[in-house]
Length: 276
Image (tube, rainbow, N blue to C red):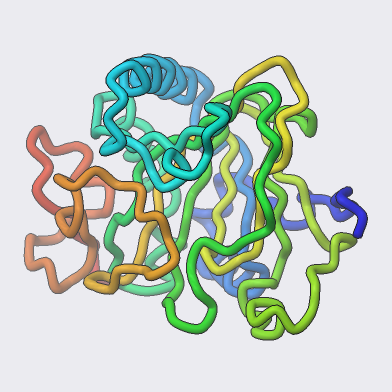
């Protein structure tokens, strides 16, 4: 099979304004394709602040050697080139999430009324990282839809190891059961500029590609799942103190707040969503 992705990600891209103006249309495209790229969703200075925070926390956590702060990738990669860093709700992370959710709330609510945060982390790769095998984060057979939001904290050109995704593979049972191989001609490389993001259905087949540059590649990501249903296949890269605490939906009973409310609160207890 060819390892080159030949399809363009431009066909799956929207401007951030479309998330607010046409959330149902964007949600429909996401259901169909399993991914949507959003251009310039985070201001560059906000992305750069998160990037700096990730640099600092990664250096500190690696020095400590405590696996609590790393996803499963920490356990099975012994080359030290790929780290799945669990993040705290620092001021930089809160600012980024608030801005993301201001844009994404309408799309998420168009998909389903209630969500629970299940991952909050940064995927960090370094020069000479060999990339990953093609995989899905959750099962097509057992799991419900989980939405992962990957944000570029700097420009990610092809040589810096962008994620490769296979549009519409999230609903292809034959692929997930291994009855056929992925079509490389349909794959897309998620090259991005600083502040761009890609929304991905966690059942979508994808892989991190090799980092052939002399620079690191940092992706800030959060994942959202239906409340009270932990995914079997996902790494669930979330610090224990946030598990089952950050939710959205009318069942929370905390009043008429938006998704972003939790990140604006000084002591954030819950996420709740406006129900219309």
